[in-house]
Length: 167
Image (cartoon, rainbow, N blue to C red; front, side, top):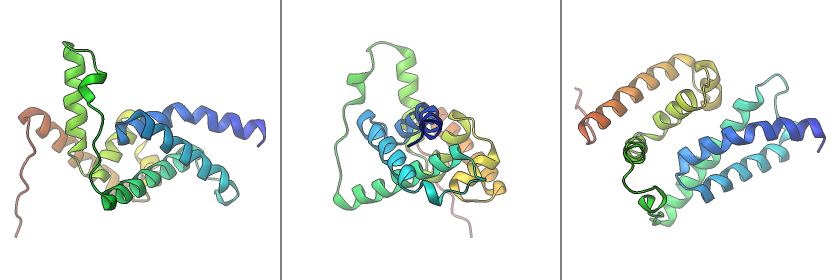
């Protein structure tokens, strides 16, 4: 691996780790996702579009790795996660608010959650998020609008909004 490639990939690791942790909610799983993502990127480096955005390509690989692992784990059965309260200092309002926001984010469908993380946390443009997710830019805007609305409803009410039946 040449130094230029190594440094280009290394620059993306902090953002990939943030995104992986936001998706997986577990440091060990996030690290595994990033490692798998980088391994896949290196093994398929020759297949990459040279005119494409490296950052978007890596995020697409990471998201696909997460979705595949999610479906694989779902088929295997329920896994017990670490106690989130044990990781946050007791008595801190900020930690509780963050926990509420993360719990609300987990209630969103995966495509809405991914969009909120890409646009809101990683500062992807709508066009870049569309490229990562492989959907049109207009779809990004409408899904993002629905995701923000639903997240706001969950946080304000403290419960999941019921779905309306449309005839």
